[in-house]
Length: 283
Length: 259
Image 1 (cartoon, chains in turn orange, yellow):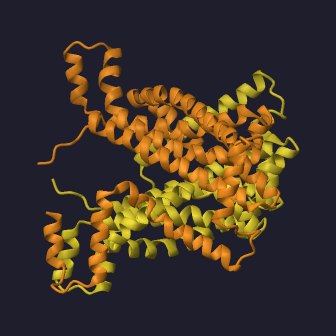
Image 2 (image 1 turned 60 degrees about the vertical axis):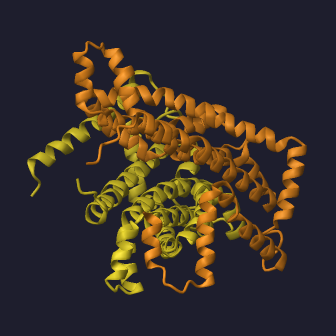
Image 3 (image 1 turned 45 degrees about the vertical axis):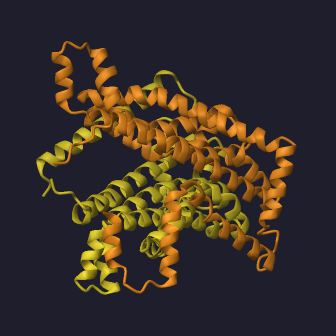
C-alpha cells in the first residue's frame, strides 16, 4: 500500500540523491539495530574533529579517544562498575518500593469514588511539588545517605504509577466487571482477573514514565547528596575540572537508559498492550 | 460570572487539601514535632509574609520563572523547525530518530555538571540546562509528529498543487502540533526539575537556591514554604497553561479517526 502510493509521487527522473535516500530507508528498515547505531558515527567523528581542531581548549572539550581511555582505566580500577552498580541498585530498589506502594494505591483510587474524591487533589499537589524540591528537607531528616536517595526515587516513581494505574482501572469497560460479577466472581477475583490485567498496559506506561523521571532524580540526588554513583562521578569530576569523566558519565547514562528503555521497557509495554490491552475494534 | 457547578467542583477539589492542612497542624501539635524537623503552619505563613514583604520571594520566583521562560522559548524556537525539517523525508527521519532519542533521554539534569563547567555557575548554565531539556524532547516529538502524518494527506495536498510553503504551514505543522504540544509539556516537566536542581547547585537566586540555603540553617519553615510555592507554581503552569493548550490542539488539529 505504502510503497505503491509513495512511488506515485516519485518523478520519472530519479536523482542519485533520491535513490540514495531510498536505499537508506530500505536498508534501515531491514537492519534496525545497525540503523540505530550508524547515526552516531558521524556525530563521534564530528566531535573528534572539533576537539582536534583546537576551537575549544581541550580542558573544555576532550576528544572521544581520551574518553575511551578514561573508560578503560575506570573499568580496570573498578570505580566505574562499582558506581554503576550503586546507581542501578538505588534505582531498582526505589522503583520496586514505588511500584509496591503505587499499584495498590492506584487500584484503590481507581475503584473507589470516595477515595478518588479525597485523594486525587492531594496526589496532584504532591506530584507538582516534584521530587527534587524534597531534597533539602530530606537531607535534614535523613542526612547524606542512601535513605534520602531511595526516598527521592520512590517519590518520583510513585506518582506516574498511581496516576496511570487509576487511568487504567477506569478504562476497564463496565461490561467486563458486570460479566465477571454475574458469573459469580468474588471481589478479590475481580481485582486479580479483571481490573489488574485491564490496567496493566497503563501501569507499564506509568512505570516507564516514572523511571524516566526517577533516574533524572537519581542523578540530581547523587550530585547533591554526593557519596557515590554515576551522578557523583560526574559532579566530582566537575569540581576537579575534569571534563573527560563528565562526558564519560553522560555517555554511560545515555547508553544505559537507551538500552533499558528500548530493549526492556518498550517491549514490555508493547507486549502487555497487545496481550491485555483493550484493543477497540475499528469498524 | 462563576457557575455554581464549577464552584462546587472547585470546593470538592480544595476540601481534601484543607483536610491535609488540618492533619499537618494536628500532627505537629500532638506529637510536639521540633521546628527543626518540620514546621507548623503558622511559622510557614509568617515566613511567607516576611518573604513577600521584603521582596525576596518575588525576586526568587522572578529569577526562576525568567530562566524557565527564556530557556523554553529558545528551545521551542530551535526545535520545531529542526524537527519538521528532519521529518520531511523518511530517510532523514530514520537517520535522526536514534540520535534524538539518545539525547532526549539524556536531556536536563545530566547536563548540569558540564553546563556549569562550560558557562560557569549562574544564569548561563541554568538556562542551558532548561534549553536542552526542552529542545531535545520537543525536537524528538515534532519529528514523531511529522513522520506520523498519513502519507495520503501529504500526497493529496501535493496533487492539489500546494507549494512547499503551503505544505509546511497547512499540512505538516498543524498535523504535528498535538505531538509538539505534548513534547513541550514533557520537556517543561524535565526542565522544571532541572531548574530546581541546577538552582540548588549553581546560583545565588531562585527557588531552588532559597530551599537549599534554608537547609544550611535548618529553617524548615522556609523549605516548606519553598516547596509549597514550587508545587503551586507548577500546578498553575501545568493546569492553566499546558493542559488546556494540549487539549485545544488535540481537539482542533488532532487527527481524530472517524468512527
